[in-house]
Image 1: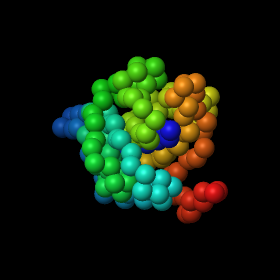
Image 2: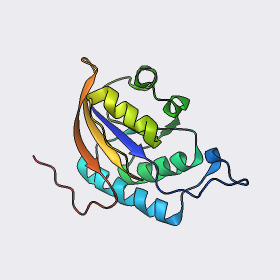
Image 3: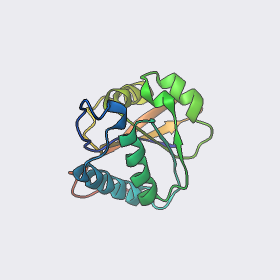
Image 4: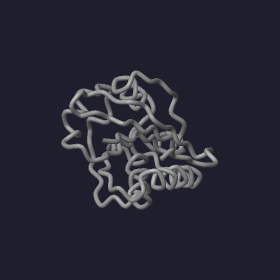
Length: 157
């Protein structure tokens, strides 16, 4: 199964009027997310995905764009995506072998990547890591990274 880890796009700064939880994507952030999501859709070749997102507004916006581009029907909000324990996320979210996308924040996504396949990257805004995950063995292989700055996505057949 594929596990797709996606960071939200550029968001407005936190201010006294706008809490961290309510920060929205900027127009640039929306473009970043759409570009990465389109490349992911090309990789997935119309295979449906289930999307889980943290409850923060910018991640829910990111998940909405991802759902449009990747033909996902449903978006699930998961409070577990606001903490770094991969085991708690896996226990709640991994149900079968179908591809899932987890939309969250940099430090948590980095911890999930490290826990699932012993790989480490600093997630760019709207960055997407793709993991080929073996449910039985509970381990994965890091197979790709997409960013809005990527010019072309090539998948070996």
